Length: 101
Image (cartoon, rainbow, N blue to C red; front, top):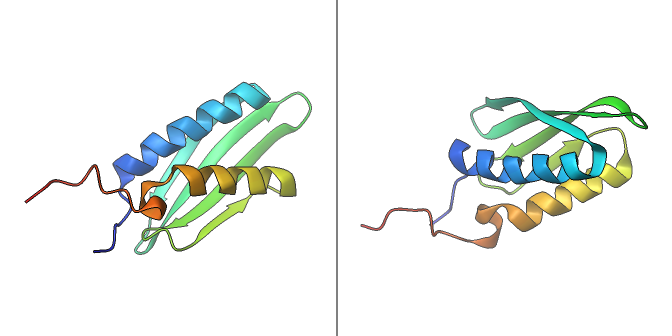
């Protein structure tokens, strides 16, 4: 059985990502989550006196086969992608949140 990513699971993971960004950069807020047919588009705003204001765009396929991060800063892109690979349950094969029949 293939585990599909849901909005509720995604919001939990993004809450942890937002907390991490807030600790490191001072200000981070989840702007928008768009659900498309096969993927989610996530926009997160980060404000910092060194970075200025920047918007992070994240594309996650619903089956978690593909994750793309766009920030304009390669190091931050890689850190966010590694965080999502570690935290998303569909990548780890975790089915704890599914109801049993």
